Image 1: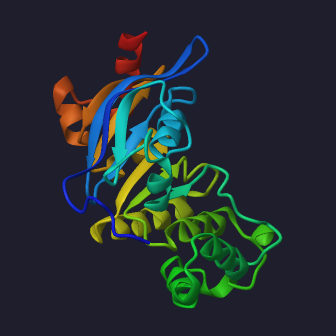
Image 2: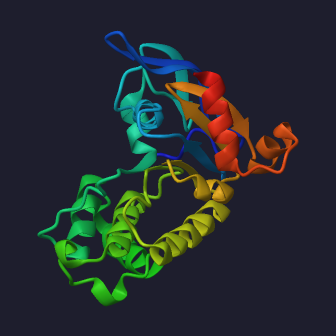
Length: 249
């Protein structure tokens, strides 16, 4: 795989990004930047436009209007290059339940054409994601947290500089969520840029910066501390989001 076109600075840029499905504006005029090595959160309730935004940034959906670039590549003009330079973990994890941990990793490594590098990458993934004890277990028999970490391992095999996680902690227990965030923080410290969608407002404190979305609109951006300070009150991020959502309506 070629080196990423952007190593520092804004790795993801959106300018007026918009997506219509018929008369429905799923995403409406979204604009923000994401810096290298950031954990950036896109928060909002179901139907707010989070997943549609992610799918456009991954080169999976063509925007109706506006522009966006990921790792230096235009999502509209160079979607295949975007796909080569990102990792993507969906809500459903995308695992093959009748394959073992190691077989899932081998399958995804084949898709990424890792070839001679694959055995070493599989060992890295199993150790880094703490899957050694279940490496021969079928994915169907694993816990939610184990499936979560295996899906993350599959998304990281090809060393993508940008990682997209769509509702990654849905349906997993608190202990598994805590371990997952420890792993995510360590990846960011190694300069992987991580974009996470979630509707769990209690996860907002894990983000370096965040964007709140409501009805397709970006209604606030900044660090958690900046968003709180802008209200000048002793409010939680969940309380602030509710207020912003009410204003948007």
